[in-house]
Image (cartoon, rainbow, N blue to C red; front, side, top):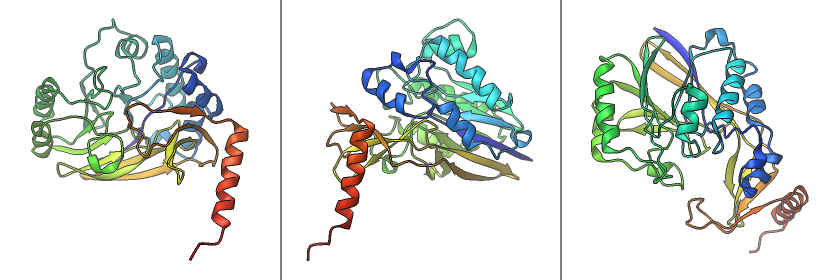
Length: 302
């Protein structure tokens, strides 16, 4: 058996970004729209060979049902109607998602689903929570996951969450979970785990299983020598292939720019409790880049 799929994450789409918070509205005003970035990333991909798309959360930037509805239309066109399996993130309103994306009556229950595409079982586990922005895998989620694993009947299965699961991979706290969740994964037929949230690509292992975090297709963040965390335009997605039980994942990166759009002042970790945020104008960004270039050229002190 062979199948190929894409892993996309953290789109942060809005029809009109001016309705987001003032800080983020300023950032998104300067960024290339995520749908345009996606089109650039996939321009060399032949979708006749792509079996499905994983989208691991933050489809919108706290959007309403109309944002989800429009995003689905755009992505169906961009991805040539390839099946999409989605997982909500911390910037997704679960009711609006269900109304706009799924077209069903809305409630705020977790969106946990098991689907099968091209001989592969896909478990979408909703780690988002209004009360836990860093993500949580609850006891109820574990009970549901256990039944989903049983239902997958020992066939190749992949797990998708929004929030990352490893402490070591990024400065943002991982999702909360118990040892039961780790045991369930380790003892299961799950062959790989996919997530997003950090906006930074990562590959490793979790509970002995291959583990991948995707870049964002919207923006990223970087810590600079001035101890500030800056928003930068950088996008990426992951091209995955599964053949005879062997999974390979290739990162596809977009063009990175030196322009910065916003800053968390004096924060080495973007999880700090009360972040002081500031939008950076084009002129300010040019001054910052110029100063860094001058500092780099200064002779080192002995």
